[in-house]
Image (cartoon, rainbow, N blue to C red; front, side, top):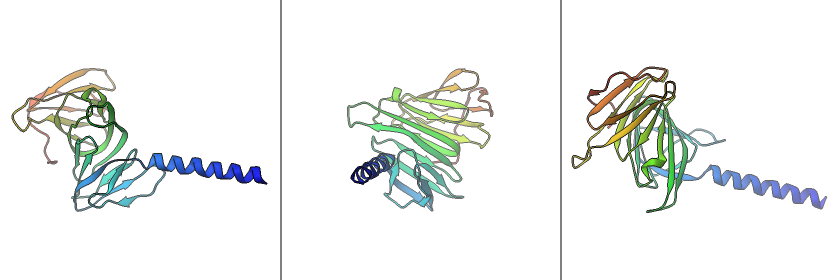
Length: 203
């Protein structure tokens, strides 16, 4: 009987540890209009409030006419427009000057991403059809449910030129997109021509 009780306590400890890991905060809700929700791993959907922690591996979603800004621990910021959905797949931050890793997976909607202090080569944004590699930047994305969409790169606050590297998951083709440029892609990740312009709808 004692061995059974010991085993049960050990199992409970493992479950508690797993729950702690799965509920690891990676940032917080820094702006919200009017509402958005979060579904943690093995959790239930809950409405977010200002300054609520954002949990690693959680799915975030905004409502119709909604918007959400997340500020991550490394200072990167992610803004979601209305009817948008994403998952924070991977996030490791070891503090200023350290290493780290950040992967965000967009499902659909409107997004604006501002990179932080995690080394840029360790930051990726995934869509169903295109992988976005960061080179220190601010960029916008619009993504439809079928995987098609568009991406544009902004200028820095002092006129700095930024760029991102886009790779099609289907064809393997890679292109470099610079500040002031925009490119669209279809539902299998085939790029159209690069043009001047910006994705609208997510400030």
